[in-house]
Each structure stands twice: as C-alpha cells, then as structure tokens.
Amino acid sequence: MTATTLDTTTTPAATAAATGVTVTKVAGRIGAVIGGVRLSGDLDEATVQAIRDALHAHKVVFFRGQEHLTDETQLEFTRLLGTPIGHPTVNLEGEYVLPITSEYGGAADQWHTDVTFVPAYPLASILRGIQIPEAGGDTVWANTATAYDELTPELKELANSLRAVHTNVYDYAGFSPDKDPEAFKKYQEVFASTKYETEHPVVRVHPVTGERTLLLGGFVQRIQGYSREDSKLLIDLLQGHVTRIENTVRWSWQAGDVAIWDNRATQHRAVSDFGRVTRVLHRTTVDGDIPVGVDGRASTPIKPTPAEAAA
Ligand SMILES: O=C(O)CCC(=O)C(=O)O
Ligand SMILES: [Fe+2]
Image 1 (cartoon, helix red, strand yellow):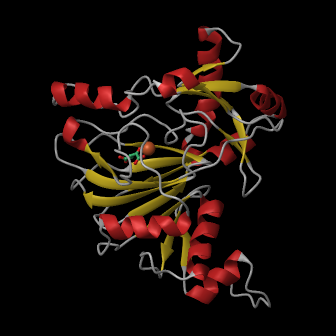
Image 2 (image 1 turned 90 degrees about the vertical axis):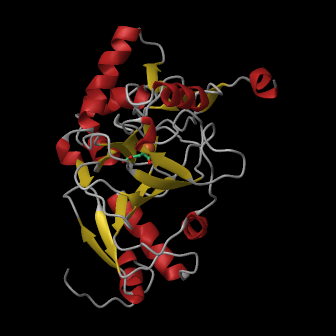
C-alpha cells in the first residue's frame, strides 16, 4: 500500500492507520486478513470502526492467532459490532454461542446466507476455529455484490423485480445421516421446530454501502409468481453468478482463527472433505435489519403466522 498523508481521521484508511490495524486482501474480489488486533470486548472505537470498514469493503475478514478468546470474550467482542442474537430454533433463549460441530456428521456444505428464513436476519456472523482437522474443512465465501455487478443490464432488471420465499423447513447443514442417524434426525427436528417463511427481494440494497446484492442461498424455496420449474431455472441462473469462483475466497482454518462476514453481502459454505474427524467452530451472530429491494419494498414475513406464533 502506498503511504498517503491525510488531514482527516475519518476515512477508513486513516482510521486503520491511526490504530495500527493492517488490512491485506486475500482474493481479488473478496476477503482480507486484519492484523494488529487482539480481539476482545475492550477494543477502542477507532479499532472497531476500522474492523467495520474492512468488513464492508472486503465482505469477510480474517484474524489469525486469537487463541485467547473464550465463548464469553467472543460474545463481548460481538457486542461491539451490535446486538448478539441466538439461532432462532437451535439456541435456547438467551444463548448466543452456536457450536458448529461435525459430531452429527458432515458440515454446512450447501451455499447459504445465515438465517435468511426470517425477515431481519443477522447482519454479521463471527466464527472462531476451535478444533480444526489436519487437512480439509475449509470455508468458502462468495461476494453477492460483485455477483450482481457482473449481470447484464437486462438480467439486473429481471433480478430487481423478483421476490423469493426463504424457509428453514429443510436442513441446510447437509449433515450426512450415515454417521449418527439418531443425532441427525434430532438436529433436523430442532432446526425446523418452528417453521419460518419469509419473502425477500432477490436484490437487496445494502444499508451501509448502498451496493446491490443478490439475496438467495440454500434457504430459498421458490420465486414468487413463477412455477416450480421456472423458479429453479431462475435461481440456478443467478446463484451460478454468486458462486462463480472469481467471486469467492477460501479460508484454510487454524485453531484460534476468527472470520467475520457481512451476512448482507455474502454467501458461504463449508468444504466437507475432512472425513470423520471432529471439527468444531463457535459462531456468534449480530442482529440484522429488514432488507429493502431496489424498488424500496421491504421483506415480509409469511410464517409463522400471528396465530401460529401465539400457539
Ligand atoms: O462450518 C463452516 O465452515 C461454516 C459454518 C456455517 O455455515 C456458519 O457458521 O454459519
Ligand atoms: Fe452459515
């Protein structure tokens, strides 16, 4: 990076420079490693702002060497980025750390954005590597803003007009039932214990960056107003742009690594190539806002209906 003298401390580069935070890109379109930060709940506001700026610019940021973190201090750090929120069905009330573990078999190996089956899904997720296989078990993220950007003007117009229904009724985590069929069944029952359905715009305007992003991923069930067959073709067409390898970054975990992603501008998936060894990461999430489409229309909840929610 070239050193420039800035007479203001409000630009992202100046904020980063003032705090000793370094930001180094990993792939061409997504991902950066942040150096010079020991994550905790005690970071000063300038450092937190430098992390936010890097997150918005690079969509997923990585920190190495954060072995000192515990569930408690990961949660304290999470509070600096916003309001922590537990998983709507898997976590108990007031429980904010979600273990991502291979003990039921497999991993979340389908492309998804976290928790899009509810209207105000998390704005960011924070994942900490705890028990990492010797080889394999990487995570891959995709930039849904550059995916939108590369569409032709005609496809952008079409995408801008679409609304999609997202649901948790099937299990995104892709756990292989052969490992422990009972545990697998139990997890699926818990995961879908309340059935959620939400209609989101397919193109979401990012509330901070103003970028247009494709809002799809593994919880999408159908496109409103289209047949099942046409829905599938449309979803595959757009999703194919999201997961184009040029829009992705792949991270090879070490214990003590932390990844934070902008859940409003990314999809991600695990690479389920580590056999039967145990892989454990702990996730916290930051509560989000209700998406708004290019036409200004917000997402709308479908299920649970008020009557179902009251039952
Ligand atoms: O296990 C992984 O690599 C990804 C897990 C995941 O989807 C998540 O933490 O939201
Ligand atoms: Fe996820």
